[in-house]
Image (cartoon, rainbow, N blue to C red; front, side, top):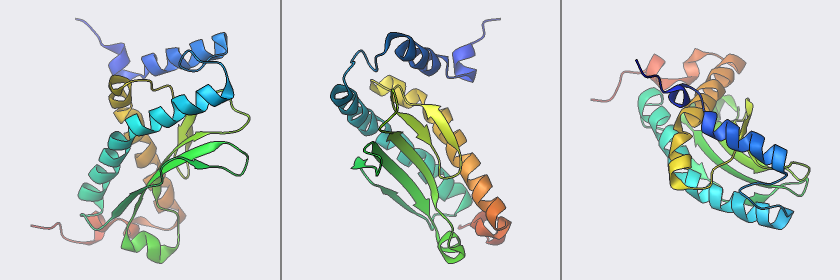
Length: 169
C-alpha cells in the first residue's frame, strides 16, 4: 500500500521552511525588500484559500450569518507586514471577542513569514505558487478550527449558531 505522507503532514512546506533557514533565503531571495515582495505575492496566492476556509466555517457553523473580510498587506507596528482574513458573526460581536482569523505576517525581526490565528500560531508561510497555496488548505482549516475553539473557550458554546439555531432550509 502506498502512503501519501505529505497528504497527512505539510512536509513540502516544512522542507521549504527548513531549507530557507539553512540557506538564509526565502523563495530564493536574500534581501528584506525582496522577501517582502515574495510575502506580498504569497498573500495574493493564499487569499482565495483563506476566504474558502472562513466561508466553510460560516456556512456550516455560523449558518451563513457571518462576514468575511480581508485586510490586504499592511504595515505592523514593529515595521513588519501583515495581512488578515477574518470571520465575524453577530454572537461573536455581541460577546466582544475577536473574530476567527488567519493572519499572514512577516515580523520585522523574522527571517521569513508565518501564519497564525487570533489565538493560535505559528506556522511557516513558504508559498511561492498556486499549487503550494492550495496545499495550505489543511493548515488554514486547522488554524480556523483551533481559533474558533479557543474563542468559544473564552465565552461558551452559544457563540456558535449551528448549536443554538436551526439550520436554514
